[in-house]
Length: 279
Image 1 (cartoon, helix red, strand yellow):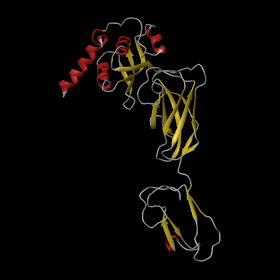
Image 2 (cartoon, one colour; image 1 turned 60 degrees about the vertical axis):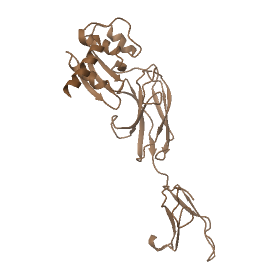
Image 3 (cartoon, rainbow, N blue to C red; image 1 turned 30 degrees about the vertical axis):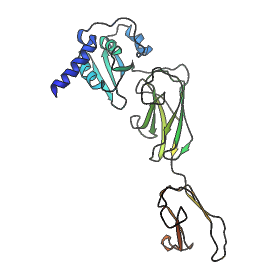
């Protein structure tokens, strides 16, 4: 096991010459490097606070290689986003920028957009499993900007779902400043917000709340008075939709168990094959 780990680490180091030799990579940075970081690399600073997004299978070896180099510090690691946040030496930043295993590398710090950044959600209330539409405007346009759907009182890291601004969990080729995204509402009822993050974990905006809840079931008798032996028509709406949901006809002053007649939502006393939420 140790030999395999060392082999992977060595392969990563050989694939990125600056790790092995400490040499500076030539001038122009690839498009995967954001403009703020590209500008800071020209400042002559020895290290840079960066966010590195990796392709699957590269993060662990890269982390080991970086920590094996003097001056590098890893501050945070987010496996679900496949990224590292750390303070990295200039030569290693430039090597990472040219590594085939790196999707994007950006400066970790406050991001200033040219216009107000907004995130809005609709509708205000949705059923579990329903569709939530999230609209982003005025973002900074980094390729690794993303939106998380988070329970309103929870920390940012406890997101229930997330997407880049291309609507996927695959890093886009180019960044965008606005987007319309669609999330499936969590099955757990509660109040949620959509939160926009730039360059990994720099939060730019939080949306208005969206409430995820089941609608209130209603049962309505169409007639208030009927003759004995005549039919009583009952309309049910917003039921939970289980196959074994049923309606009982009960004297008004009696307990639930004292029903005089009952039916499943298919109008029979044989369980239906499919779920129904209304009848």
